[in-house]
Image (cartoon, rainbow, N blue to C red; front, side):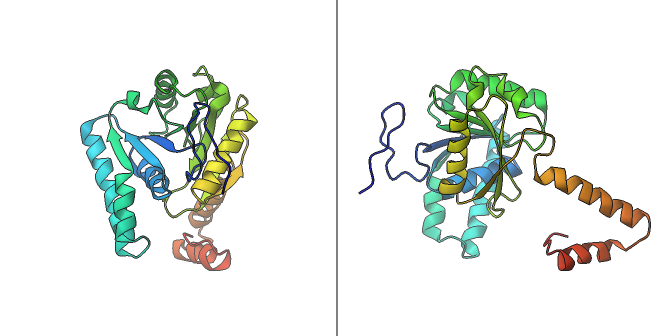
Length: 247
């Protein structure tokens, strides 16, 4: 029988899929936010999703539930798993409802001011002292978001790839202020709770994947513009010669 594990508040989390992370909040229910929420809920975690308006929330809810329905139709999950996953999801337009979250993942538009304002609000409303505030940003320096809070040691980047339910990679990006404990908990969450493969990157532009991807895409554009090869042959070359399924 496994040893009892408790949070700093004394709650027993033995057997919970995320270890000490059992309650997740996701800010934003667009393409990435909905995908991240789906991944977390399918992993057995309690997930609350926030959007700015009721209309945006309903669009996001429909997107998320349609994705689960397709997964069930394709045999990726059973109908019972679909229903159980939906039951673990709740939706709100009030970030104040994130007070009890162990981890909050921000997944809104890639705008530094918008993200900073969200982190300032989360810093005020998330009451758990050991809660992790994470961003799904692909380009904004994490340290800028971290210093906007009173808990910069608990801020980290958890960068998922689209579509989140399919893509196995997650980039973990510590700010200069991020504690090793926060980074280790984020890695355990990504790997043990979600079953993803996590890599660590320094807090620099593009992190790992986009820093490699952008020059590669620019080379393909220049090759096409120079008439070296057709668009189709460039795609086929990367798909068949380099095993890049999306070209």
